[in-house]
Each structure stands twice: as structure tokens, then as C-alpha cells.
Length: 103
Image 1: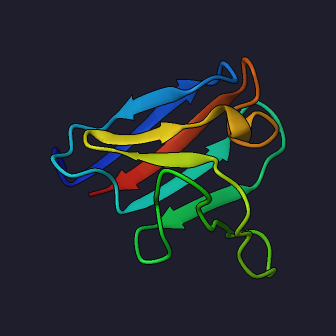
Image 2: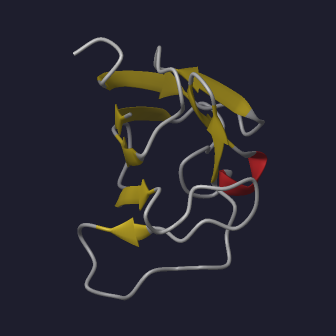
């Protein structure tokens, strides 16, 4: 639904990448999964903090508690940003990913 949710894909380049979802106030939920190789289902929510700094993330395929000391995503008015810090998980150079974002 335009302006409310966005399903899409991106090819990672290991640098800061802005994902424009067409939102007015950024994403409140983000789900990312690598599609061209094995990878976890990473997710973030604004309730747990999507900030310009460390953001707790969870994995749907893992029962471990959240990881709190990473900065893989950052807020952006139009959607969200993938940071270079995620270069080993959600931003592996030339990796293919799918995402779901909800405003």
C-alpha cells in the first residue's frame, strides 16, 4: 500500500544506501533477508529503536535475544538507510536482498 508499506529488493554495495519507500516519516518496521545466499531474517522496529546509531535487531530464525551493539540501519524520512556497518550481514557487496518496510 503506497505510503504505508513497501516490499522491494536491493543489491548491496557495502556502503551507505538509502532505501526510498515513499514514506512521509520513515519506517517503523523493517524486515530484510538475503536471497542469493544463506542469511538470517533480520528485523527492526521503532519501538525498539531505529536511530542514527546502534539499533537493536532480532532474527525470526533465531531464538536469541536482540543484538544491541550494531548500526546496520538508520532512519530516513523516505524509508530507511542500510549502513556500511552491515557489510557482513545485510549489506554484503553484490548481495541480493528483499525487504518489507512499514511506515
